[in-house]
Structure formats: structure tokens, C-alpha cells
Image (cartoon, rainbow, N blue to C red; front, side, top):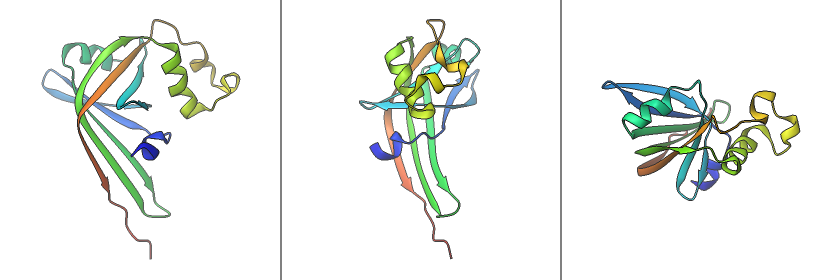
Length: 134
């Protein structure tokens, strides 16, 4: 699972708002059995997490050419944490590369107006749903 979660895949963060599910595509960092997600001032999911900490996260690695389909599903609780540049830069480097100078300008100078979402899984389901290509 560590190798799977080290890939720059999209995750889908599911939160609750007034008894209805909300889904947000996010980048993530898996570190010491915690999923970290950056929340910006324009994101609504940190507000929802402050009201209801229960979340689910789904991550899929899919390759139509090879038939690879790997899925990881997590349920647990999240907290909104103060922004931490070290964690955020590790997360961004996973997707944008190690050379910060080459990053899109939107990601170069994140500040303390951002937050981190700390998601602690309580249950994890990992499935290999790959299929053969004929």
C-alpha cells in the first residue's frame, strides 16, 4: 500500500454538509498512517470538517492500457490543523516535482491563510480490481 499511496494520484475527500455527502478531488500526502491534504481559503471542505469530522477518502489508480485498477478506501475522522510549510511542500513536491522554482506560481508561496487537513483512517479497504487486456 505504501508504494500505491506514494504515487501522485487524485483522492476524493467525502465530507458531510447538512446530512448530504460532498465530494472534493484533492492531492494528498501519506505520512505515518495519516493522510494530509492542503485546504485553501477558497475551499469549502475545511468548514465542513470543522462541523462534522467524519470523512471518507477514495483513491484509484487506473490504467486503461494495462487493465490496472487499484482502489483504496478509507473511513475516519479529520481535523483542520494550522498550516505547516514542511508538510505542504512535501505534498506539493509529490505532484509538482522537487524543484520549487518550476512550480506553477499558485503553489510557490502558500502562507498561513491555508490549513492542513489531518485525516486519520479508522478503516482501510484495499482492492485490486485489475482485469486482463485481450
